[in-house]
Amino acid sequence: MTTMTTGVAEVAAGPEAPDLIIENADAVVTVTFNRPGKLNSLTPQMYEDLGRVCERVNADPTVRLLVVRGAGRAFAAGSDIAHFRTFTDGADGVAYEDRFVQVLERLEQVRVPTLAVIDGACVGAGLIVAAACDVRIATTRSFFGLPIARTLGNALSAYPLALLTDRLGSARLASMVARATMLPAAEAASIGFVVEPAGPGLFDDLMTEVTGQLLAAAPLTVVATREVLRRIRTAGLPESADLIRAVYGSADFRAEVTAFLEGGRAEWSGS
Image (cartoon, rainbow, N blue to C red; front, side, top):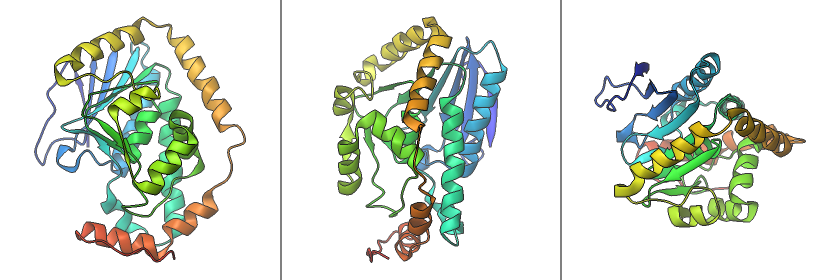
């Protein structure tokens, strides 16, 4: 469910609240993931809606900046695991990853600069969406991770892995996945993933500063630079569907989805 508003609106709450809030004010379109009770876990519909926002921004010449943020104490804590209950085999996992990549490509190829505003958990798919933006700012309480080897035992296809490798470095990324560790905001800033984080009292000032810088920048320069870097990163990207099919079709994945949703924990069998 999505709404489009003009001007600054408060994030709605309650069972009838939209999962995605879109505001358009002063040449800035702001997308807010709005499932704070679920730490803004992203549903397939939210992915589709984010892609549509990118298309609408591309069609509106008055828009000069796209901002993505989350409601409450998270940017986004991964994908909504309940959706994985619908998977019957590995082909469903391949299709899911393909759709996710299509949304990432739309976000990476939108015609204006993009800013991820992060306050709290930025994990799993949330980390990937943030990584697809040009610039990321974060509060000091924010943290970043990809704990899929501890939660569901699923895997990422080549496109998002290449994106995260580019932003975080392959050694750090491999360690974060294997050990299911979180990257604090200060460390994320030290490697250039986010701008130097700010405390709650200074974060609004930081957002105003960075937003002003992006609005003042030549958009063609920013977007052309981003696109050339994307083309370098994706040139010769290897096929990964066979690996994704095997992981999503595994007994481990099916067992852990059920266990996770029932509040338990499955034991990895490696099959």
